[in-house]
Image (cartoon, one colour):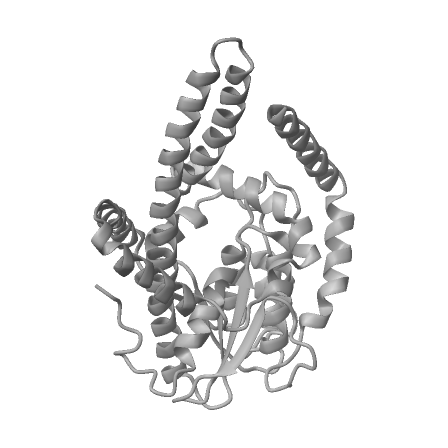
Length: 364
């Protein structure tokens, strides 16, 4: 029965994908018109904060920081990023754009088969010769095309690079190197497994998870940002793109995708096995063993995601943004393009009154 639900759900997903591909241009153009309200110059107080955007003053430098929370590979996130940077660059105050990327991951993203965005180089040179593209604000910068085609792996990070170059802003790769992150993940899995096997360390493990959890939530990104109807509508596109990108580059994310698919298959297989006469006990035994193994893997992964993938990387990202705030002049704006899960934690770290190097240091 559960397998039937999976088949029906996958069929509906394929139908939605096909419809979005067919109506790519119409959907995209309507989204561009609807999201023009995100083009708000810095310094203007929002009556209602736009979804997925956080704006605040860095305490020590008083430089405005705008965090753009994205669902990776989501066309709505890419379009809102474009509108936000256009609004800031329109006042000539864009200093730099910080990406949730390291040099290794950035090389992989730039190598994807992306749709060409922006104006051609010949047209751009002509605009410069006519004096239409001088200074930090270039009034005739062509707006990048945003596509809903799930098989075109358009990343918001690639769009951010184009805009930073077009508006002559500094482009910063602010994330920790993926090789260091993988080492920390391996250490986290091993250490957590040792703590689980030792009941006397359960209290310490729970305290560690809760401390990291409270550090990454409650900074501004909330229910209406995550459950934004536009983000949810385009969510299947982002997930499919993410999976294709993970396959192409053999990303560690494939482990999570594989675990999810295997979990669905095991549930269906044990259910079918239980319906065979004389196999109920075997099915219950297999299900019990599988539930124990999957629960253990879930705890290990949850701890690694909260402490390593979020909390530790938030400190690295906050340090990179803070460094750009020190370099920016008064009145300039630093834009950071992050996953939505990072925004609250980064904001909380940077708004501490004593946000020094000690506050942003990486934990051992």
